[in-house]
Length: 428
Ligand code: GDP
Ligand code: IMO
Ligand code: MG
Image (cartoon, rainbow, N blue to C red; front, side, top):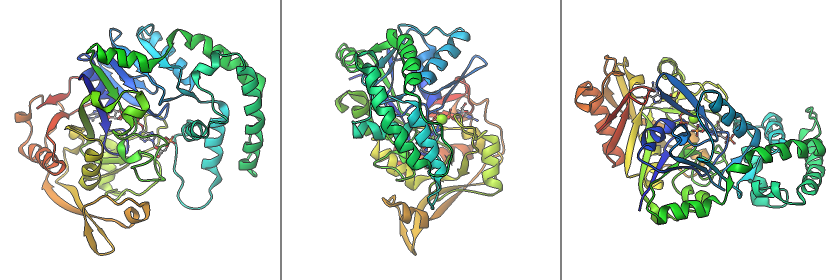
């Protein structure tokens, strides 16, 4: 049963792209199965940095199939831009890339809705989306009436469907725009543009569900690349401050069409601390010199939007919950080098909510908002560790910190990362 899964256990940006890239050489297929161009996964190798958004992080190795399944929401100009960008840098993208005809397509009205809703300010904290049209597209998918899947772009009737949907969407957009300016969508223009995109994407469009099931039945090794992180899962995360897909481990079967029985190893990826982009409660947030240290040393600025990421201590209450929820077998601890130079490190081991100590992650965002982090302190280390390649060569306090994370999460730490490059990795 050759399925390996890489899942972020925090609020995204755990460096999943680096882990997927590392594991790709031992796999035949790499799969993106949820989310869309809200993701920004970084791979650094041979002095080159690649920022991947919709394309699976396996795309740099052309001997491997990169597959985008029906659970992804696909923005044609984004993916075409990514393909062109890679080709310009000498990465061949051809028959190795497949995308599902079942994937829902993002249209300009989704982007406009995302923008208008985010700027509407209805009181309360904004979600702070990436404004990539993700939520509006998933909403239409579940609603069915106004949705178009990639396969629909090649069917007769596509032009009429666009016209009918645009009629409805322009009325809806005018309604939510209120006094905000918006440019009505032109159906003919959208149809012409998307016809062009469809032509260019055609060689890659396939029934990826059958492809993956065939591959797994033939004992091919398949790697599932999660996007976002489990705390952003629409059902199990910090709702409503989440994304619109199942970004924890539970989303793999539904997003990919591959049953859970094929997943034989789940690797949970965490940063050695915590970050969050956008709104929502964050009990271990450090809006102070510690947060500043983490942001500057970790270059914590969004890959997609360049927004400064909110930074804080490692939250073991949240990650123990998501490690269990995602069925993580092992843990990868990333960006450990960022902690060098801090005298004392803190791990949040419980919350205090209304005077009560709890170590179960609250299901309601209001309770999480009132949660005060209870910390365990560990001594830090001064040494730079970016050149270390063996666990035994890490400072003793760094090893203690890793051991404590593994112990609290109840899973072995399998990989430790001490820098962005493929080489800056310690396998335990
Ligand atoms: P993803 O969305 O989970 O793939 O993560 P991102 O790519 O959005 O963010 C992770 C960032 O950390 C990227 O800029 C990586 O190049 C960088 N990175 C990955 N591993 C390490 C590490 O061990 N140390 C440092 N300093 N940076 C790392
Ligand atoms: P990767 O795969 C970090 C966050 C947004 C916002 C919320 C909803 O790179 O880890 P959306 O545009 O999805 O409707 O935004 O989710 N978010 C991410 N945060 N990493 C990501 O992806 C994210 N994708 C979405 O900042 O708070
Ligand atoms: Mg990212």
